[in-house]
Length: 115
Image (tube, rainbow, N blue to C red; front, side, top):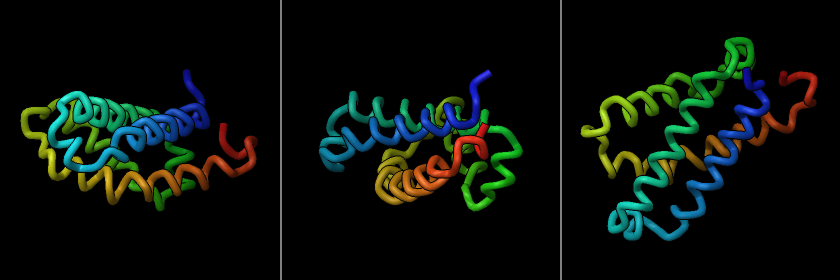
């Protein structure tokens, strides 16, 4: 079983990968199906990693929107025909940068505090 720290690092890595192509801008995102799929996949990775984080860590960091992150993953995986590209871009622009800051703060905690 993966440790919480590894899952947090998975989230951080997925965010970096999203940023790599989101930096090309909204027009590239809208016009390029590969960029859309790349970003959607990494949002799913974030949701899967968040889903698997221990309840203990989630309770310690209840400022994090764990349920919303996992909920986004469920929509992307199970209701993919309903995915709204405008909403996804909004998540990329507004929510991913905040999530990055929050994950970075948690990862700066001493290793013994995060299993």
